[in-house]
Length: 379
Ligand code: SDX
Image 1 (cartoon, rainbow, N blue to C red):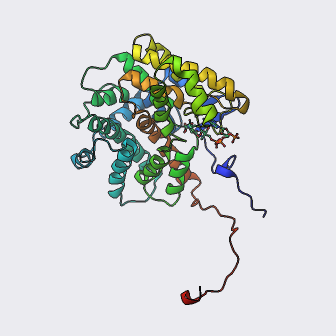
Image 2 (cartoon, rainbow, N blue to C red):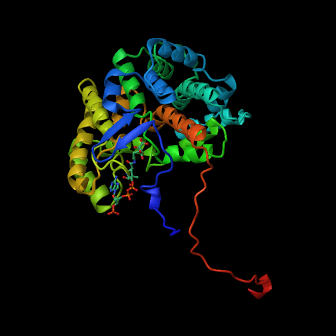
Image 3 (cartoon, helix red, strand yellow):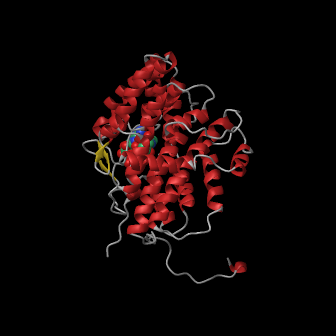
């Protein structure tokens, strides 16, 4: 066997999947064969949850059953809420999410994976994510923690916990679509981390902690926050050229929200988030300011990088949409995580139930060969 390393595991396949299919050349993303544009246009996040867990779009009855199950688990224990409320306001939001799921993991004593029980467990964790992320937002905003009041949808219930004022139905619709857009994306670093952890047959909550730890970094989910903070740094559309020349061309800094290991054309999700940003920009002057900056920056960066297959990815415009919904600039990554809990759990269930082997790669040893031990006074 000739040992060779693929840097960053590029083009290494670690599982088969029937969940998500990406065509990086054509810029196509499909969940269980349904195109992301169709799911955003016609579907709801709850339908996508059902699709990812059970493999098909639900009937009305199946959808109602799922929603009733989730409603039972939207709220988290007062113990967990109190633990989160003790964290400092300036704590990192993803770090707080890691604490929350570590607390859930601390209660996991049954490691047996059973297909039907797994699906119920996954639905419970997806539901609990709503209150966890919403209350982390409230704690960081200096607001009292709050139990979910059940609304018609996951998106509406979530926004209702986050904000104390009524949420326009247009905002609920955009939040629902954003949850669909971030739900899954095959096996990025965070899903791979969750797969490695679950391959040892540990519990689902621990797999989510692993996914969160990987998502946090600026090369992955952290880019959603970092991309938006670029627009804040630029401040005005007239500063885009000088900012780009200084930071990206001269300093060789990575443009956050650009580039992708798989897409070598514009990420289809980026186009949808761009459309939502443009819509918001017509009603919100601040959003319009950031949208003008982002679209000019996208043009500059695309002209500069397209020959290298580097285009806008999902994180480039999503922060503007979340800002338009009323969220603070640190929220794009936690909102990414909220939705990706569905994808992480769908993949770990698929792996453990169908292909279970512990993930244990090798390393090529290139160090010094055998040496004899030398006593310390002779070194
Ligand atoms: C997500 O994998 C997924 O599916 C992730 C995701 C999901 O839904 O889960 O799609 C979500 O994480 C999207 C990516 C978010 N990250 C960023 O926006 C951070 C900025 N982008 C990158 O750092 C980079 O593009 C990656 C991490 C996304 C991909 O990295 P690769 O495939 O390892 O590419 P690379 O680092 O080897 O770069 C190849 C070349 C280099 O130039 P050369 O050394 O060959 O001259 O492209 C350049 C890089 O310098 N490059 C960039 C760039 N991205 C790559 N140059 C400037 N700005 C960038 N953003």
